[in-house]
Amino acid sequence: PYFWLSGSAHPAADDYAYAREARDMGYAAANEHWFETRNSRFGATAILTLHPLIHGGLDTYQLIPYLWIGLLFLGFLALIHAATRQFLPVRQRMVATLSCTALTLYQLPNLAEGIYWMPGAVTYIVPGAVLLVYCALVVGWVRKTWLIHRWIHLAAMFLLMVLLFGFSEIIVLYLVAL
Image (cartoon, rainbow, N blue to C red):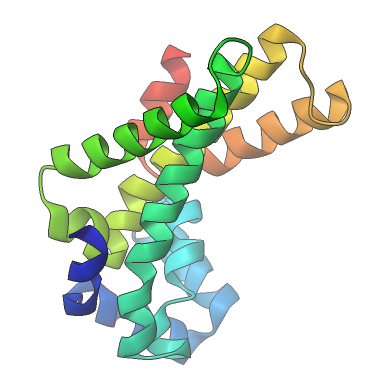
């Protein structure tokens, strides 16, 4: 049902504000403006500045929830793979990934704001998925299963951490807890 509902997604409130200001100011100036006047969520505003209302219209906007669900799926896949690949077969890892994704979507306090409204999804779902990938990299670091080389692995962890600081305050609390 989550994919089917994507066809009913429509922009509202902040969608129009982000789209108009990004269109009028340009990408860099709009990001600078939002960072200096609204909030310091540079990761979220960098994505919101590429709003589909500017670059593709309503049809593109209605495809965006597929992207959010896919990112969430890939985040869970990365973490579950990193944590269980030594003792769970691929099929069981996929079932666990699908289950975690479905449970996360089911437990959202407001599905419309969490998946189908772009500013809400960019502020909470996207960083959640990136946090899952970061956690997978932490598991890989602890187990010494690097991405190509340990310095590349460490650089990827650092870049994701900096990116996560720019999404929401809640994600920063999770990072501090790690």
